[in-house]
Amino acid sequence: MLGACSQSAEDDNADETVAPTQQSSGTGVIPKHQIDTLNRARSLDAQAMEADEKRRKQLEAMQ
Image (cartoon, rainbow, N blue to C red; front, side, top):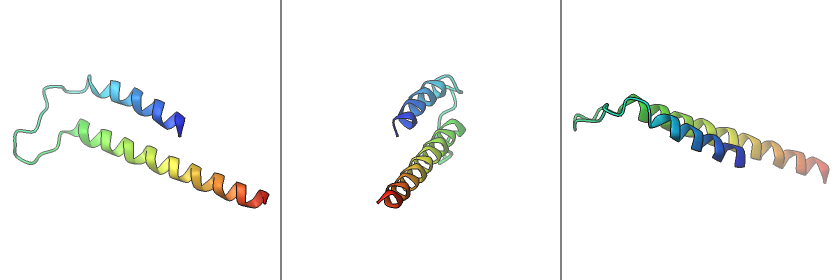
């Protein structure tokens, strides 16, 4: 989980340089860099959940 947090911080810094002039003009369009950030967060969350589940199964097997 800690690794996921540090990766997220690196990704946040990278996003600051991606198309800063690309903003929603009230048309309901979400800028691509925001969608990319959301997708990365979802992916990291899924990876953390999978790692937690794997670790839980390992601990259960040890008992």
